[in-house]
Length: 94
Image (tube, rainbow, N blue to C red; front, side):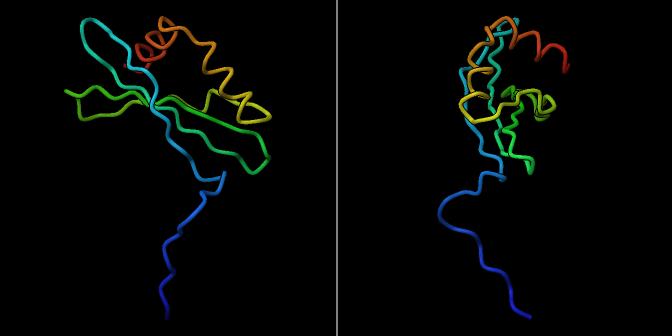
């Protein structure tokens, strides 16, 4: 039985890509934010936010609350969020 080789080269759009966003400040703490983006089987682009606090080991993430017909559409939704909305999303996960 042979082993499958590791994939190299261009990433498939169905595999999530992780993008770092600007951190937010919450009660004097810095919270790192990343956006996980993938293209679903139905062709729709979907994304979720992942929050990480350096002092905590647990990572918190939203469901795939962002979607768009194109990756650019998805990013427009993300860019439209203000810092206060990001803080509220993080608080909702605590």
